[in-house]
Image (tube, rainbow, N blue to C red; front, side):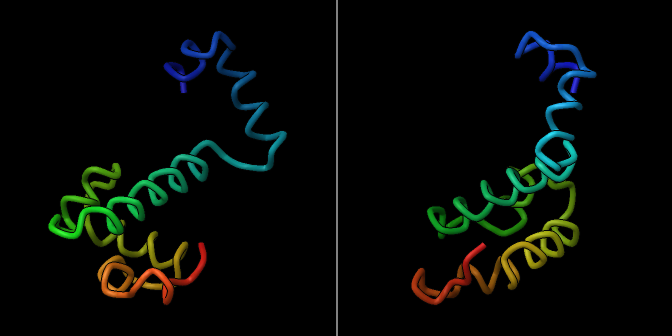
Length: 91
């Protein structure tokens, strides 16, 4: 959070206030962004492993990644990848 605050020329406290104003915690925002990134990788990088995508998306292990992905998208990353784009559930 310190680095983000510095990058945007605001105090750390102000940064937290902005997140509070929109009703998100920084952790929730970050996890959502990581999962959206993972979804794009799953869709565009068919030859990469789920483990690699989890790591590239900022997750330390595939179990945590799979659990979070399923909570957000309603299916596992492997199932998401196997579905055609028309059959995928909306996030």
